[in-house]
Length: 244
Image (cartoon, rainbow, N blue to C red; front, side):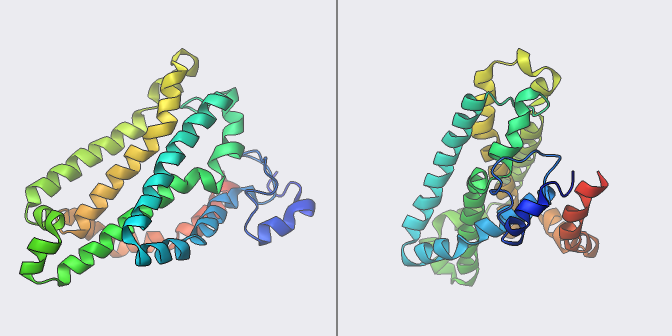
């Protein structure tokens, strides 16, 4: 099942569009099907130059573009969940189509992609803030300056964000227990907002770490063992499905 139909679709794998052609693919069989994560990364990276050009020419337009993508993505997820009757838990017959129609498609990751881009924009502002004079920090970067001067607020935001991440991971618990006892409206809400709040919480933790409020996060990222593990992520991603 690892190389099913490769005689017909080997070329789509070489072009990094194997998650689009063929359009429908099962989550446990196909031609190099487990590389879909890398295909999506490549496909979305192609949009980065466009984002940079728009943001550099008109920052407000660049931000508005990503906010629009986030809103439209949320609506798209909810529409797909309604149309295909997706449950919050994939462990049911409806989950058979979840991989092919939602999980392994680049447009299904646009929300996360745009939220990552907004985090990058915020980090650029933070770099400018660090180089600014004390007077400029108070006048040109009022919000950043307010947050930077209140470490207790940053730590509180981190604590709340970490708790929120835990909640998003457990929010499908009832559906995993018995998906058909859960009101489908809740499933639709799950698809529309669960990812958004999880990534928003991750962004908050990350930005607080960049601002120096969450020193434990910085020490973790700078740790030699953590960096060594990170370097193996690509190889693990390719080998893990074969091992499983």
